[in-house]
Each structure stands twice: as structure tokens, then as C-alpha cells.
Image (cartoon, rainbow, N blue to C red; front, side, top):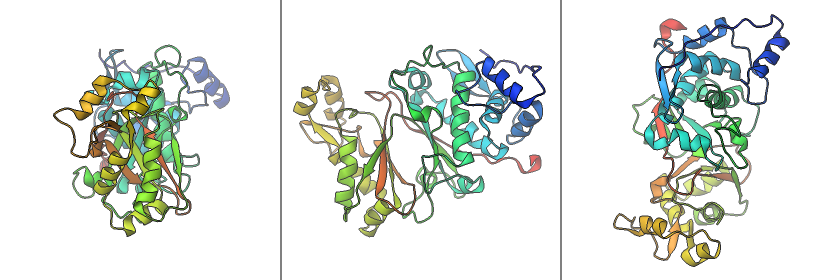
Length: 359
């Protein structure tokens, strides 16, 4: 199915009446939207050099396509500035890949929300927050980029709560789930560097994330002490699966880890080994499945897999680890995958800044 052709609507001249009109059309996430007047949409489109009708994502279940124009309309409604638009575009181009499982991750009872992690200099250029209150309110770029994703899922792909979106309880991240990776004081290569992009290239990583787990540890003075707290959260019986996971380490925790000389890979190895539950324990909670155990302990098993236990993921690289948040406070976080198995796999894509001749 081709992308739907743009349609211009006659709306009330009064701003508040126009906002109410958008509510009446069912275009909102429950919060007021910015009426997408033609001038604002055109300005948004100037942040991408391609024709407005260019399709950047396809929803396999609904057969609906996302054009740059439709993305721009929803980005305006979300409150985005035009400089944010390349992040929205790159995110949907990443999520369009089959391994992300676009439909399952947006329709499942698991209630996932697309988590966006922006890495590199472009995050700073557009004023994204990688610091205090990282996942909280208060930053326009973080808040509206994440919200644009939600509005597109709703308005373009028709993933409507209670109709096509069958989340049992939902997830606050369904309003907005977008952060920047903290570069300041980060001892590791940034994600965009680890992902192999050329120097100076920023990226956005997309993850179908479940609920947010705060991991508090103010007393840990070694990497093992800090990471054991994280691993315990990752291995709780409520959500341990073969799925991937995101861990965002607070600077206070990262300092402990980096002072000991631990690399990202060593942290991933430690978490993979430590984030495990015994088969007997999983059986006691009705969580054990033979085929999942066989998948993890079959011929392709990772060398760090322990017999008689289920680990979080299939291998250490299934745990994405980065840094974010304010300097003070021993509060890191773990974000699980949305499904019991490997329903969705991390995807990332380079961010293409707005063309210079269209500024």
C-alpha cells in the first residue's frame, strides 16, 4: 500500500478550538497537540533532502506506509523543532527492519514502547538531555521526539489503544521514551562509535522496551557489588527471558566501574553470568520452558552459559550498556524487552543532519 496522500483540512482560526478539533479527529495521545498547519509542516520537511512522499517505514500487519510528509505532520503535532526531525526519521528507518518486529512490539499485550537512545554530537546540537532527570520531563527534544514516535504509531499505523494495541497494562514510555547517551565523563566509546559508524556520525538505537526498573545502590564500592544489584533486577522472575535488555548506568556507578578499569564488554560478560535463575526456581513460578532452555544451552551456547540456569539473553552482547543521568545518586536502571522470547532485536541507524542549503 502506498503512503496516503496529504490532505488539507479547514479548521477553526482560534488556536484552542483547533486543538479541540484535533482531539475530535482522534489524533492525540491524550495530551493537546500542536495543530499541524502547512507552514510548520513544510518547515519540518526541510530537515530532510528527500521528496515528501518518500516512504521511510512500512507496517506489515496494517499494510500502511509512513511517508516523510506524514512523519513531519506528527512531529509538528508532538511539538518537535525541525532540527529534531532527522532523529525521528532515522528511528523509523531503524524500526522498519524485520528483526525489530514492528507489529508485534506495538500490538502485544506486553505493553512495550520504542525506547530511543541518541548517541553522538547531534544530541548536544539539538539540546537533548543526557544528564539529571534523564527519563523524566522537562526537556523539549527528549519529550517531543519520543512523543512523535507515539503519534506516528497511532495516527499513521493505526496502533490504537484497546483496538490494535492490546497492551494489558501499558507503559508510561508509550507517551515518550527517548534519551541521549551521556558523553561527558563517559569512559567508554559512545554507542555510535561502538556501532562502527564513521567518526563524527551520530546514531539512534531503538529498543522495544518494557517497564522501567530503578536499581538503587549507594553502598557498592566495587564493580561486582554495583553490578550484582543490576543483575538481580535483570533476573527477577517477573521478567527474565531470552530477550535483550538495556542497562543505563548512573555516573556514580560508572565511576566505580571505570576506576577498576572495566570495559563495556567486561560489564556485559559479568551481567550475563550474574543475571540468571535456576531451572528449579523458574519451574516454581511457572516460568520454565524446555525450548527456551534448549535454545540457550544448545550447540550454539555461549561459553559463559551455566548449566541448570537460564540467563538474561543468549549472549553478553544482548545486554546494551551505556551511561546516563546526573552526577549525584546511585540510581541506575534496567529496561527489559517486551516479549518472553526474542520478539524484537536492537536496531540502530545513523542520523543524517538537515541539509545545509535548506536551513
